[in-house]
Picture 1 (cartoon, rainbow, N blue to C red):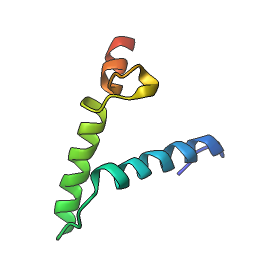
Picture 2: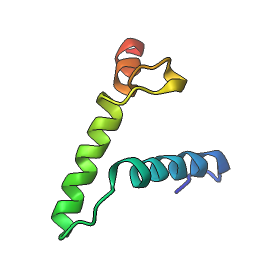
Picture 3: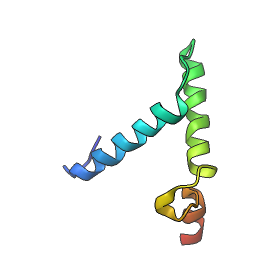
Picture 4: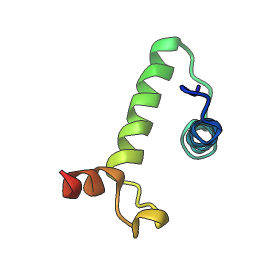
Length: 68
């Protein structure tokens, strides 16, 4: 999952995958389309609604909008 052999990028990817599995993907999907929709909804919630302690209890998109 990394490019340029940066071991810290893999840790970040593993953290995101863990959050998806532990907080959002709590049920078994009946089809691939259901899973795809659930992942899209989970990413939307993660980026737009879920406050992050490391970001001062703000969402990633709020921080991104302030930076641009």
